[in-house]
Length: 243
Ligand code: HEM
Image (cartoon, rainbow, N blue to C red; front, side, top):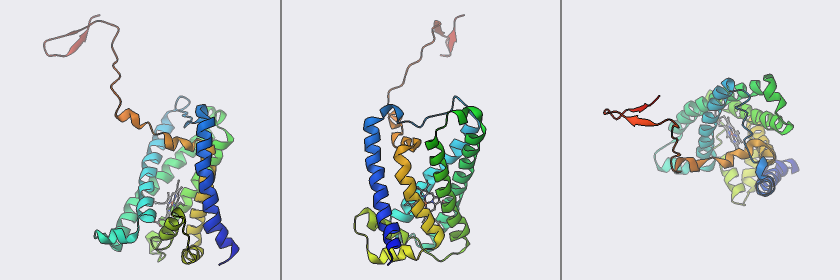
């Protein structure tokens, strides 16, 4: 095991996760007004509607795919009868479609941010850094799925990256799994190590909005809007405004 292996597969993840957690806590406490997705919908709507919708639906499914492929042990799937063939069928088809959505949606968002003048004027350096890092991590990840796993590559991330990630998250990294990461194909190594660089810059960008999903909207009371013109109900219970 080399020093580089220890740096990449032990030190980098822990430094990055520490910055990720502390960075969010500090920013939440000291920058409440800056804690935002910085919506630019009022600056340009058409391209945003397509790019953002496709990207966000895609990323939700890619996230669920990571939970299934990296965080949930392979044995759990085996125990409920989802064996390798079935898992890989789902990972390639559902994962592939989700991956395409993220890449296409992300590409539209990127084009919008570099071509619409009003959006450019309202973008900060951190917006570009976040977008570029996100783009690289996504493109490398998708290249692994489409160019390696889907074309019959025999590296099984569910018995290498998965257990290594779980060992990191439970504070018990083992030599065996660090060596498994050191022997992973370069595309997978790049994807995972760049993801940790992304996590380290995350709290200082607009990506913090991921933790501010407006879930209260789903349970809050209706907001009642009333016309300022008097309204009568006709006998078919349809409402009619008096002009
Ligand atoms: C440490 C964290 C991460 C790990 C261990 C990880 C691991 C993986 C693995 C093993 C694959 C390959 C799946 C395959 O070959 O089918 C993959 C694909 C992918 N990853 Fe990650 N990843 C991480 C973080 C991220 C992040 C932060 C993003 C984006 C924000 C991301 C986006 C993607 C995408 C778009 C794909 C292609 C998947 C698809 O087509 O459905 N990953 N990742």
